[in-house]
Length: 118
Image (cartoon, helix red, strand yellow):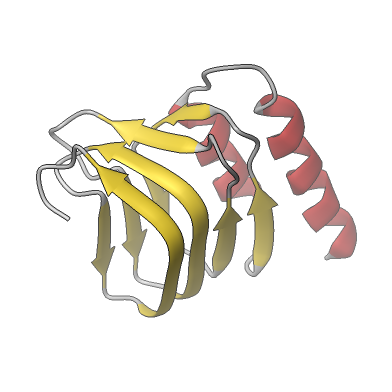
């Protein structure tokens, strides 16, 4: 698992190093991640929405933003356990973070702005 975790982490850091990114970059990294992986995002803007459906830690830093249009949640955590969101800014969306059928969710240092419901 360590090799795959490092590969996914490297992919996220390399893909996210230059300016705005699409949801496909982040969504693909999440899809490719092993359950329990830690994905560290650079200080970039990511277009949502994204869905997290496995145990995962998503960590940003100052300047990491995930944004979506007003008709969808920015981040959906769906049918899983043990998800951590840390040090992110979430913008827009019908909901900043929507949690459905999930347990053990930790949200730390996350700012939600301009969301219709949060």
